[in-house]
Image (cartoon, rainbow, N blue to C red):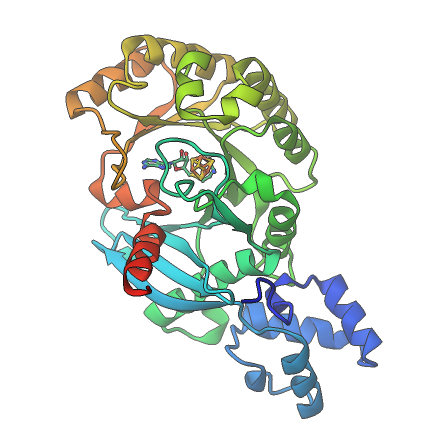
Amino acid sequence: MKLEPEKPPITGETLDSLTLRLKEHGEPVFRARQILDWVYKKRARSWDEMSNLPKALRAWLAESFDFDPATLLHGKQSMDITDKLLLELRDRSLIETVIIRAPQDGVGLEHSRKTICISTQVGCAMGCVFCASGLAGLKRDLSAGEIVAQLLHVCYREDARTPRARAELASFDNIVVMGMGEPLANYDALIKALSIVNAEWGLGFGARRITVSTSGLVPKILKLADEQLGFRLAISLHGATDEVREKIMPVNKAYPLAKLIPAVRAFSEKHGRMITLEFILIEDVNDSLDQAERLTEIARDLHAHVNLIPYNTVEGLPWKRPSVARQERFVSVLEDARVSVTLRREKGHDIEAACGQLRLKTERDRAEVSP
Ligand code: SAH
Ligand code: SF4
């Protein structure tokens, strides 16, 4: 089986790269914008829909580019707050993209704020012991085109949910890079994809509404701080001391807190924006009062927001979420110290914390049916 698709996906092209390809083919350069307009603004689903392009050009495009590198297998709905899109890539790899709707008082879900959670790798090499995404290691990086295609599939689904005039196509409020994979381990494809998402000829989505979450690859955090586009940063901390963090996140050996914290500080000083510390609460692993106090110190030092997430159990792994009483005890330490903190209490958000599990289940089902 071929790992690389024969044709590059159109969603991996920038205005410059597409212009170049068209020039080489003897086409006028304005065609590049027309084509990208069809992809991102008019949401065409095939080359044939691009009615203002000559037939011969459409045929050449079909030969030269993959229109869509992902096929929607199914979308799982959870209480209507969260939709999970399971996508199959050309090499049959599975990835998922999650739509999270935050209900607002007095308005229906149609008008809720939407956050989209995207994946950057098939599997993950980081080996965090609690995480479903990393259980089978890393299969491969996603290409920029595959990362962008996830967002287009979200657009297709949302457009279908709320049929409107073409000029008012569905959009969303935030993008979080918190799906499968370690985004900063696939740095170049990530930045290319996000710049396509941001570009005015692309999805035109503001960089400040995009959050990149990392397990703590220090050199890449510093590199991200130097990017022109000011993305938001979230750190998967999960342990407030090296002793605890090292037990559950192997990355802490290469980049312990003494290296991670200064890198995060450098990032937030450069961007002047609050960063987020993600902290999954796992029973008897990191939910002690001592951890809460150490976390308070780190959050204060970095002026960071803390997002506490009760652990979502993963089939085959021994970890559990602490009781609600223990969760409340932990959060109150931070609240008493006036740290900006949220604890996810809504059940519908479970799915958000569990990016990776639907794919895992489908991979297992597949393994059971194929000899
Ligand atoms: N690799 C990146 C981004 C993807 S993981 C990172 O680690 O930050 C997105 C978030 O989900 C991380 O904070 C991760 O630690 C968390 N997560 C993974 N498995 C989880 C589980 N079973 N329950 C709750 N959160 C989980
Ligand atoms: Fe990879 Fe993030 Fe899961 Fe760790 S938590 S294994 S870095 S996806």
